[in-house]
Image (cartoon, rainbow, N blue to C red):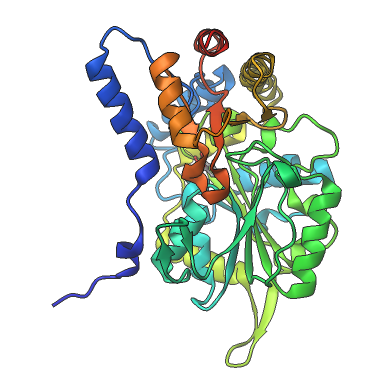
Length: 409
Ligand code: PLP
């Protein structure tokens, strides 16, 4: 008889988005004439940039020709893409990342979930609270998080680092030393950021403590302030302690196209008494080669095109469009008397729910009175209680209408 990985059974149900979907469905059935505007889910709405579409078409034509047809892609990614990434995302920012430290994949979600496989089950993880749920859930599946307390919504063996108004949504160094530290900046869901100086403190801490930082920079393209680093490798000695995750989803609208990459520096070495000197880089290369057959050629060509001058101009406009939505939401809510943060270096606006309303009470209130859907902050962790997330990824028209409705409440 087979035995299952019971760690999966420890996971509480996907309460957040299924609960939101159920509430919308029930409301719509009861009020079929009310038009609901959704500013809840972090998915993009603008079409692919024309320069990217052209690259896709050209790559499809290559695949239709026996002379240029491509089969399996190299496991770790085509060199043309890894070279382009190393040059534009790193060398141009003064970071020395070799193309073979870059591992191309089909998503930062899977990379952020898979990377924990490199580490023993005995490692203690630390996460920001609130947090993108994948980091914790993937560690639950691996059996690294202890027991779940439904009352507090926390796991016994996870170190939670609250990010609230009191600390400017920047975590303090943890009281207990973690082995693996997940950081995501610009942050989903708070929209918060760390300055380079603040991030350097984390790099120094990790190097001193022998911890590894898994740095999720999926929203790097939205940074507008000069002192906010685009990569953790802008910090001194980060190559000795940090893995970086990047995605083409939010900078280039690839949520349905699928392309991402992970940087595992060769400096991330360690000594093991049974195996001697070893490197996380080689372990990830082995894992990638064994479990992954490479992102499609067509998609990697589209990824390369993202870095062309033409696409960069088009994508700058697209990011600008979303960030103008963010400004409209932020200014509108501030005028309406809400306490609002985020929306400057990230496409997320994080607001304090009015009075003593819980996140879910505010969700119901907004749905019933303004017919606007957002995401309750408590769904991202206990410290998200009393907060609410709106995204700037909607259309301009819907964003403006949603804010007009909220202002009238
Ligand atoms: N990381 C963070 C912090 C995200 O918010 C998201 C998506 O919302 C992802 C990763 C997923 O990226 P991808 O579309 O590349 O899987």
